[in-house]
Image (cartoon, rainbow, N blue to C red; front, top):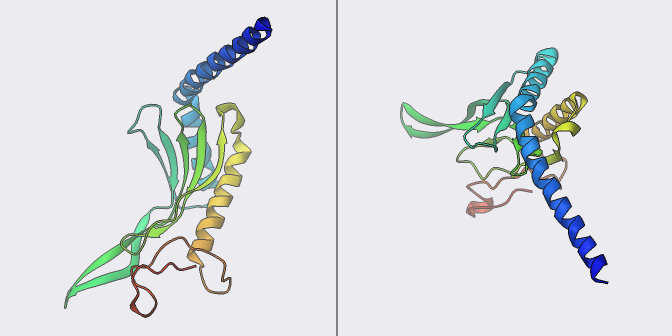
Length: 184
């Protein structure tokens, strides 16, 4: 009986060691080539289809780096009037596709939705998938960019034709003057 328990415990110890080793291996792969492969695939894809976007490497935290395909920031067209000849523009972040290292070296792929600063709360990002480095292949980038474009296009094209569609923010003004109304 005790031999079976020890055998089971030994398998768990081996699995733990394997997972710890994988974390170190995935982090090494990110630095050696994986990060650059993501950048190259995204840049090539944008160039091939004429998508105006920037690819940025965000490296503020070691082993938690990210590669972002960002659609940029623009004046939203909304502004606060501060005087007869003065206005404060609200900035719109057009959305992005993020490839973020996780603590264990795997990579999470996220869509950040567009949002307008000071107009409401940004919608939480949409998780597309989590990958080990060897799982993320070039054809996946097309699907990821397609999904991001679908999500940001839906956000941009919001109307009341689909009453169950949520755009993911709270207005800073509400129905009949009620602050914080959630628009669904």
